[in-house]
Image (cartoon, rainbow, N blue to C red; front, top):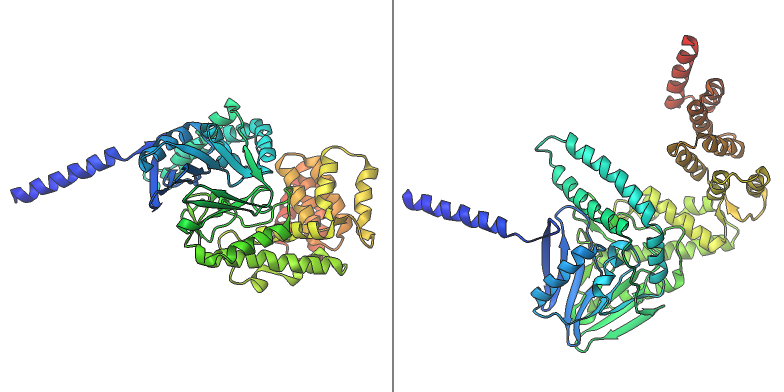
Length: 478
């Protein structure tokens, strides 16, 4: 019994020592994963969706792919990479795209050649211009998270994730407020580039237009590695996938779909050279089958939208012909896919192929800036044109109106919902939304009239029924 007790005590001491010696960076757990001889992947945190930095020892020196975007963290990770690889001859940093959480630590590797797509620098300038807005958002978010953490029970399982998220956001706020030096790539390309590092080759392929304008994929055939940045993932390892949450064509960024699809197919043709795919964040995984399916999804939609736009089709017809569950049943429940993401992809593809912009977005901007009524009506009148410069989608009008309400811009919301009612006079939901805006504005009688019209069009509108009861009770009291 005594020997057993001694053994148990020794094991406990060893476990305690192991826990004590667990390495951290900036207070967050450090993870080091060996991918191959001379190839490692490092990241911080057990719960947060932090960037994973990959480092490869080559004949010409150490090559690093992506930074965390936090210079203090990246300086420590550089030292850790040197320690793990047994060498500190860093020669190159590759940025998979422009976003701050991948390029914000570029200054740490300013002594190296920095490689990225030619659009990275422009994107980084946008990051710098948005620093004040990001800092404001983070300040608000931190206060919310601190209050949420305080409200949780001591043993609440979500506390660990929230603590890590708080630590990361504090570091990001510090970085945003510091106005850190922006260090863009020193070597760029537009389509494809091959980097010869002696015993190791890095093949760079432009695949932009999805997550960002400057996305690239990096193939290292000697190690069978394909790194896809933040463009896609078909498995999430945490409940907060972060940048990997959406596989969608995003509005407002540069697109070159023929080149994107061509380069994707070049990578698909290299299947025998690819053993492992890695995403830009540690908490997402990607299989070759998942990669292939996502390429097929975009390719199918791109071919269809060009055909339908050329035949004077409409966005409504395009959406009806390619419903997510019916046309892509295997992807409907896959990570990155949702009705919202599918709609965003299809509407942006339509905009690119047809040349039509969103009428809802145009009117939202005009109303927000206080444009003249004639400018607003010029857009509205386009709905009757045979081939307008805008497409009209009721769902977008409704969403934009509620954006105004969330910003307490009640007058603007009312104006946009009034336009929506004029455009869609048979829509019960349009009247319901206008009723809410009028109720928020304090115009009870007008709100009642709108909810009554909504109920007339749809007697099953339970929200309208509830609002009418509330408004009539308020009227009777006053």
